[in-house]
Length: 279
Image (cartoon, rainbow, N blue to C red; front, side, top):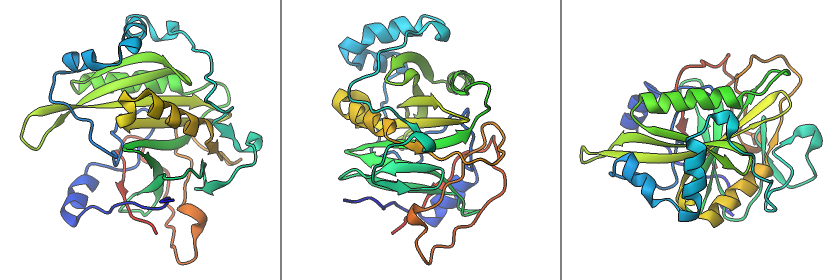
């Protein structure tokens, strides 16, 4: 299976993108670093909403019209396992060790690591299956409360400020955020890029997953990614970390010959890194 692959952008693109992207915290909106397949539309966001699955439209609209705290919690689906897991509670399974995250091995999945071009720090992972991408990152959280409610509201405000749309809905892991962010197309017109934000509060950690691509309109593919999220393992460690600090990652297996450059504390307001090829 194609696990370890990626793509390095050309020097011109890197110089431009790196100037605007750096490591980020979970409450900053950023599109998935390497969408598996563009899902942009040149329709206004209001019209694009009409193309959703009919069986989802009514409950999603009802959820959007209510305060976030009132969004109902759906029963846990049978396609889900008991995760995402804390390291101490994870069942035995063949997984890829990325340091702060452990990812199950899945036939046909590509693993594209995000690496900051300036510091060399690994800051995220994109799991690509069937034309869709799931970007996953784990962050430190306080003992007393979770982060997802505050992070979700900040993301929502950011998207709306940028001229996009954002609504909450009940999903496989509780309240989710569905966004459409305006992007400039090559022909100069404005398109809208959809994304699905999933957040899970764990034991002193918070997991954020961003789904983009075909799975947004394909219930079967969506369930496949939901199952994948439920099999992830977060390795928080015992060291002191500030809330919303990215839990450190490393390249798969720390193979001999890979010089992993460690970075200092993450800039909580900057954008994300580029994707670098491994293997």
